[in-house]
Length: 269
Ligand SMILES: C[S@@+](CC[C@H](N)C(=O)[O-])C[C@H]1O[C@@H](n2cnc3c(N)ncnc32)[C@H](O)[C@@H]1O
Image (cartoon, rainbow, N blue to C red; front, side, top):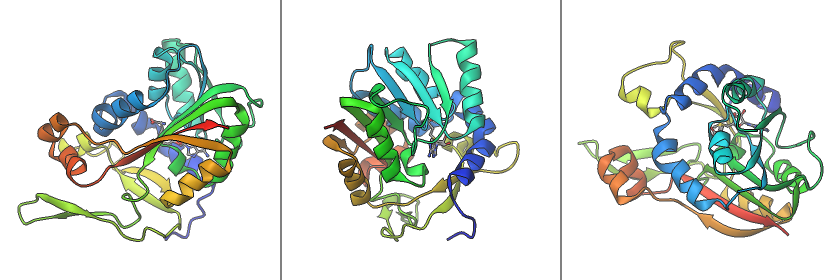
């Protein structure tokens, strides 16, 4: 529990504070989960976007938006954090890919007209906003009929407010303990990217990322998608490959015991 009110202003302020080191780390490839596991799996899961008008909801500093643009999507990136969008635009100026970036909330999408997009993508962002039903309704509004919504989130069944690895005396992972699954009180999570931890590095400011979290159950997600007028087409709980599991114990945990992320693909009915 926290005394701080975690509204959108607080979320924007936290991500503004994270923006400098987040951008440096992501662009340096320090987010190994993204590089090795979650993004390759998401790229295989998402629909083809060549020639489509696509919005990236909660695009951050835009690394994934640029990957989507290189796959042929005509991209718009949207994020609540002005500091993230400033860095995304700087990169677009340096190496133009035709991406438009907007500051705003995916719970409103006010800069956009009805039925403006063919597809909405979102990577690891919808769990970081306070109002999921509003976000899905707004997304439905800006998608054409038949348009696709495809998103990744931390798996709500396993990344609960009281998640903990169980290990034996030698440090081998025995399983994942989840707790407080039904608790929906927002809280602030603090963490660093694994590669920094492996190198024993701390960030220059000495502080980990500060990430406001809004815990929800699996049914909260599924029902919000359905209630916003989408038909769910596919759900995936990607598992690291055999090779990834052999090469990295930290991925082997997610191979053996539970998926870290959940993917959902849905069509506007
Ligand atoms: C974990 S980061 C992911 C960024 C990016 N999608 C990526 O994969 O690198 C979550 C992002 O969601 C953004 N965010 C949180 N709530 C939002 C909202 N209501 N509207 C738009 N963006 C939001 C944050 O500002 C942050 O940049």
